[in-house]
Image 1 (tube, one colour):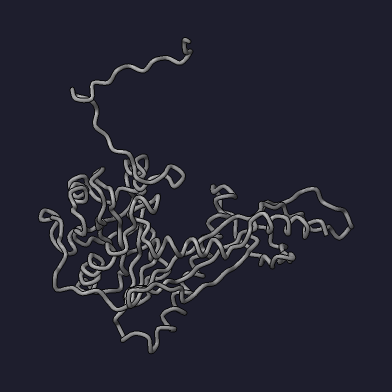
Image 2: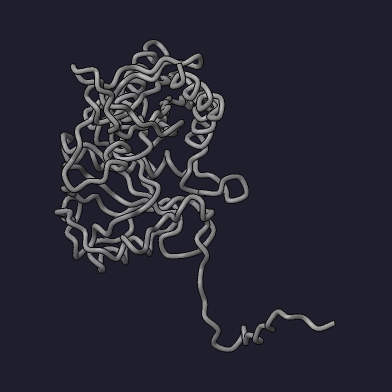
Length: 345
């Protein structure tokens, strides 16, 4: 029986075939290194001479004198759009019902903190919120049988599509919730851990939490090329648990940063590479100490490929917290039906 499918050419695997690597992350998560944006010129102002001069940049090995803190706190948040809505314009004084409407989104978002201590991990703070995000100033809270969506007014930005404006508003609210849960978690450690014997790891940029003590931002994926090609070659040459020297970078805000490779199977040059951030309010020696500490702490929580589609960057405590928070957001279909029922009343 003949087949209508074209036959594939024989490949000479042993003789000069192309060698390549497949990104370890599943396509639904994008990729750890965004090559399209990576090739774009970064607008960041970078000073690479903070720890060592750039002509002496080399991978920095783990300092054997550094010991892990008794407690490591991981902060993360999740968000989800439950429904997109249209908000009618108010009825005029003449009683005329307008036909215009403004778009909005009803979103659920939550943040939490996982405490890793004494060989165990447990959630010590969680906050769940629901909001109706819109540029309509007359919007009010939406009450449903499944909960209330608080009216969250945001300002339209010229040249920015409305969906992007609303999405940014949700992210800003989530950042505030993450900050509150982090502060609450730190307060709950009183009597649980010695002073200054913890590390706070914020999943994502440290921007909102830059004032927190002993805190670092943890960036899993890379969307911009901050360093020169010569210095990027140092990133690609990192071995497991090695880091780059600390550099200072300014975009819309100022912070210290460094790259670190987590343990992983040999693959592409940036496989398993993360970027870590620290507050610019710290003196350089404090930042260097934090950078050395992350080499000891973060690799021990790296995930394995057979357990996590975003291994090794999606650390086990963060992955577990994400699942717990998404569960707490509730059933999306139930919330969607509740919103439709509320709209019909």
